[in-house]
Image (cartoon, rainbow, N blue to C red):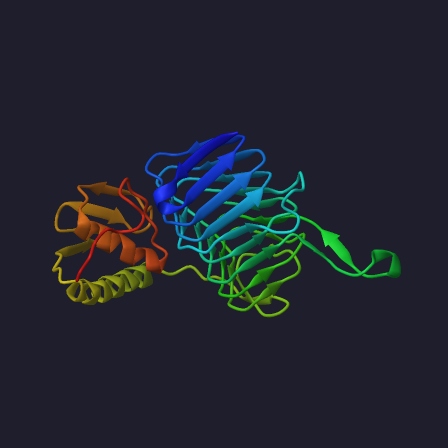
Length: 278
């Protein structure tokens, strides 16, 4: 077995095969123990108070967790207790009940108190009571709203939005917005016109300048849609999400703000901005 420990922060990560990528940051009180492989990709961040158990757990690059993540549960010693997470995902204080495989694609967000359940049982099946053991698949670009639950055997296709307090009992295949218990299709995602995109970008910049003032900074921002330039040193293409130029704490602040609008860029600087305004 391979072991990573930081006793000063109460961190212990144990696995038969262990890989921690470049510039991975950790909070405190982290306990991870898996039978097979544990890996986490470059530029990732694991918050505090985390417990993970299972057979294999593999997490991609630019993963961000705010803390209080639980992976495992009563079926964690099952050979199918495998978790695979793609790149650029964000998890909160979630429960991933890992008995059967959970596969999560790129750019997936799990909001606070979201749970994924891969097995359910209680009373004797020989008396007709239910028991179900099945994995969960979430494809790229999915956001799961606050306090939602995804149950056994569910697959969720790309670019789907799930509203808060939803219960997903059946697979979702059509791109759009879903909500309810059980979750049902609510409406389509309608692309914006070019003019609308430019107007939304102007609004984002105006709102950011208010935030920047609160942070005691006064950046210069130029818009030549779709390119936005900060202080003449750093540029972001709002459509392709490509960036160029020199980064500093001010560009970090802007980067972290536009992420709140789904304009998610990932640079070589930490996901969690080091900027302090007090």
